[in-house]
Image (cartoon, rainbow, N blue to C red; front, side, top):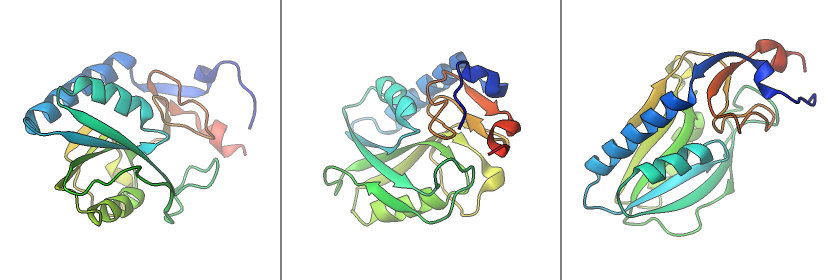
Length: 187
């Protein structure tokens, strides 16, 4: 991987601006707060990509809530395709039995990883299990996933920024941008 000073030079197009993201996150937080009124919620973030989204979303939710983190892997290194093989690298730190759970995802692509995660978490007997994703890319879906809250539906393009990476880079961009194909096809 090459060293770069200006990550934005690798962006072909800004798909979602920082303002668009923040406005939508506030709307999602209000909707979740309304839907789950009177309940305590546990947000489960799937590391690493969803961290910025979860941080902003939890501040937009006006309910008592806990957070927990999981790390799963279905990609190998700096690849742009899911392998379909899902491994849990970091499990929940406490029991979720009887709790209202909201899985917070950065992007749903093929749905394979999330499908596995939903089945795994349902086995831990939560009272309810809902899904919130910042980005939904239905053109690549291989399994049906019922998503309760969607930030944006996007086209089948390789995106980075706001937590999304390529080779662990670009996560810190404040927007979601389309990565120039020459960046990920030259390796």
